[in-house]
Length: 195
Image (cartoon, rainbow, N blue to C red; front, side, top):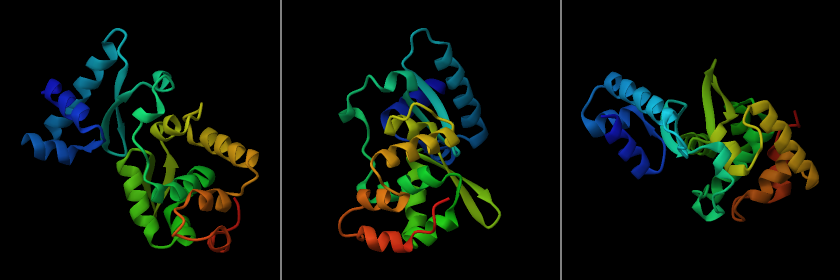
């Protein structure tokens, strides 16, 4: 079964949950989890293997190792939809960030954006009381070319990049927003004070 899972994850080109894989293969989630763990070990033991199997927020993905991702042409990376970039920028800038804080900044659409970013493996969302705590993932760091993967270091790097452009988090997010969403001044008025 590990070989079949490898083929499915490679062919899907996206992260998949245990539930999806279980339903697809008609096997219990426990069997799928054991097979995924076996596959991860097998891949890690391969000599000169360019791929690795990772699990982010309960979703599994087969991807290029971080140390090799900089050698891939930009056209090989899956694009993040433009509508998700403001949420991604705000999370990176303010992490760890309460999802409720992001909702205060972006409105109700933030729930859909967080779900989509998590499904792409770019954001980790963990229960924290009545809300969720949002942080970036290794995949996020790889996508944006950040040399660090630990979320505090990604936050520092992201803030330094915004400072180089002379932008606050709200201005950075607004500059990434599709034009029909809102202007920078509208966005800055909605955003909470910098952390």
